[in-house]
Image 1 (spheres, rainbow, N blue to C red):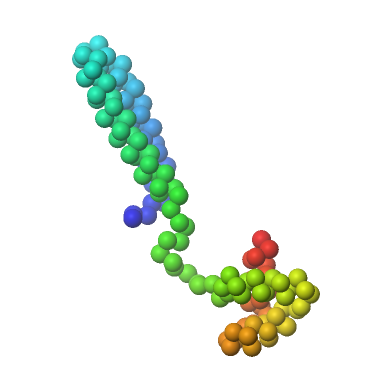
Image 2: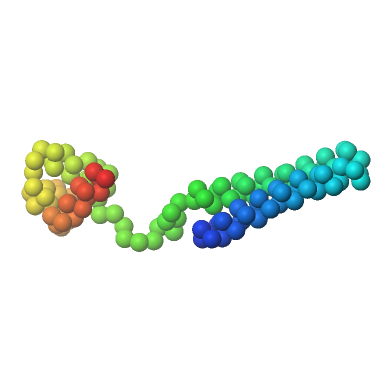
Length: 123
């Protein structure tokens, strides 16, 4: 999927609105020069095209912020976050929680990392 900036999304939205306005003006002009069934067919084609553009625009707006997975990975799993929060709620210090995590998960934990996890979870 191609990534678009906000300016490009705004440009596409503007282009979409311009097409919608053009269809409205064409409907008025064509109403007098072609049979009504032909006008309806052309208008329906344009409306289908606009619907396609709107769905693509919506998909672009709703795409994940970091879909490539770039950046620093999270240190704590959801299970570890739950344990950190429960220990923090019990009144344990960040240093004490870091020591518990280090022994339980057999990997080094730092009190600053614990503090950052607690702050991120509470925000």
